[in-house]
Amino acid sequence: VLLVLFAPILVVIGIVIRIKLGSPVLFRQERPGRNEEIFRLIKFRTMTDRYDEYGCLLPDSERLTGLGKMLRRTSLDELPELWNVLCGDMSLVGPRPLLIRYSPYFRKEERLRFTVRPGITGLAQVSGRNDLSWDARIAADVEYVEKLSFGLDIRILFLTLERVVRRKGLQVNPGAAMLDFDEERKRGWRPS
Image (cartoon, rainbow, N blue to C red; front, side, top):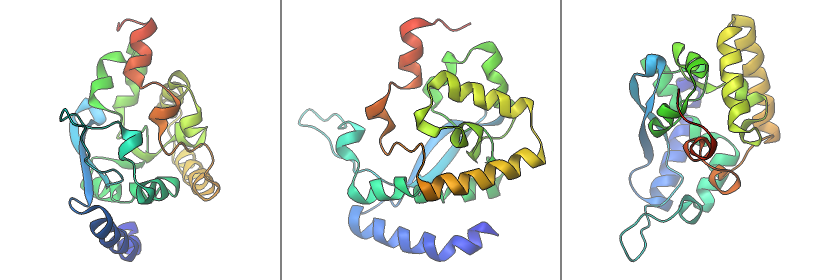
């Protein structure tokens, strides 16, 4: 239903991305989902594929476009994930699917987050989003799984709408403000 409702917006954004950034319009990346099974996450593309003189991809902060910043600020870049929900890889609410390279750095008790489908939004996103430390985000994911209920999902969906409208807790380029999860964990923690 949401895909049908948002179809005109999806088409317009797709056309604008195609004009401004070229192809591809969508960004696809493998992520661990429920039971750590790998699926392909789909989002709107927000960055260029620019390389330095040595053939290395430039840092995210240098590849993020003005259009990409706007899409991220409004969370419109996430709309194609509704397709992942339709396919059963994701849910509307659940722990955000993180990068595969982070997988070895979850503590045993934190792996509980992988017992449910990942979500477009979750408890961590409405509790502070990118303003939270990694430990706090992962703890919120575990808390969500432990308290899982329809009522909690409805509450998170309403809080998500409010946070998106107010742009609360959003970092357009989180990598510029904090370390990646794996880098943070490498500095002071060994996998169990």
